[in-house]
Amino acid sequence: MLVIVLGEVVMGNAGRALGALAVALLMGAAVAGCGSSAGGSAPAGAAPAVSDPHAGHGSAPPPAPLRSGERFQSLGMPVAYTPKAPNGGTDEYRCFLVDPKLTKTAFLTGSQFVPQNAAIVHHAIFFRIAPEHADQARKLDADSPGEGWTCFGDSGVTGDAWVASWAPGANETLLAPNLGYPMPPGSLMVMQVHYNLLASGGSAAGSDQSSIRLRLNDDAAAMSPLQTGLLPAPIELPCTAGETGALCDRAAAVADVGKRFGAEIGGREDQLVKLCNQGAPPAAGVTQHCDHKVPKDATVYAVAGHMHLLGRSIKIELNPGTAGARTLLDVPKYNFDDQAIHPLDTPAAVHAGDTLRVTCTHDAALRGMLPQLKGTAPRYVVWGDGTSDEMCLGLVVMGGAGR
Image (cartoon, rainbow, N blue to C red; front, side, top):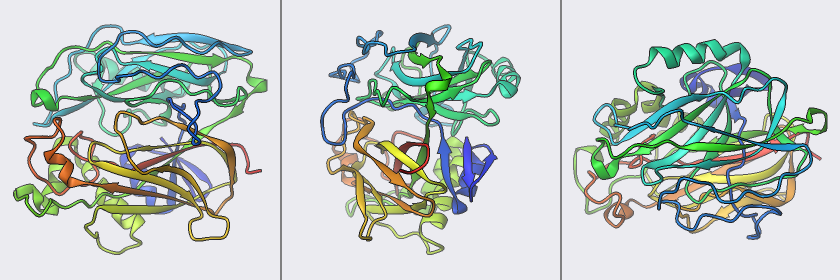
């Protein structure tokens, strides 16, 4: 994962990245996953949305026509994998190594992930592995028993960069044809799949053999590179007034996340509180926000927000409280099954020192209403990788200098 720290690029793993959040805006490379524009209309050429993302399907909807210089390439898991959650949890994050076999630089201009068993696929992220780290990725794969390897957080490979993603409701978004994500020759890709095994209590619940269709443009001279800013905020959601239990204690809940996903993931909530609260202690409440400083001039082309099942609303604002304030994303009724990327009707110029604020509202009462969460233990909810945990994450797709 790339971390822009005061204008300098620092390579690091997920734990070091979150430690650097106190002075950094996390930057990866991400392909827009799917969806409609901020104004509610589909982007030109977008493929139709899937009506029921949890129904399970084995083929992607028809793609939009290829544009000048573009070609399709499909990549998938070589064999089916049967997930089983480790550490007594109900979620597995599994990484699978795939090779686009690039012999010259190409730009990733779109992607269409196909969850073969959508009943258990919570979301997927694709990381680009630079050629100089390809052997490390191959060794990690070879040294891990079974297909792929366990990978909470990032891929576990030095210098990985987020270049594609999928969440329920996602299909394919096409931005301007000259925008894309650079893929040097010899690059590999890691497909990280989050398997949600709540329904089976963490035990095996069928196999999966997901795939992705890449949209690549080989005309590097005509392309402008993109990257995506990741804007996290803490979650400090207490149990409802009618709930009791050992995990309603914040310290116990944080420790439980660490037990299920490891110390790096378990420490993220306290890292985010330190960053976003400017040194103030955590304050329990349904709504939390975080301000991130933009490290360099850029143009924002698209935005998205990610929460889990307790999410109620999410918003991304540019320079809130100032004369030039602009709302880039406003989802007042969050739907986990509609996590589309939203291309902006008018791209937004951002400048070094500007503020990007993400604000999320969660509702612990949903725990007793949603079939997926009924029967789960009451808990003080903090940032965690599990389906019964929560996230507050804004994504801002940007490139070039502000204009």
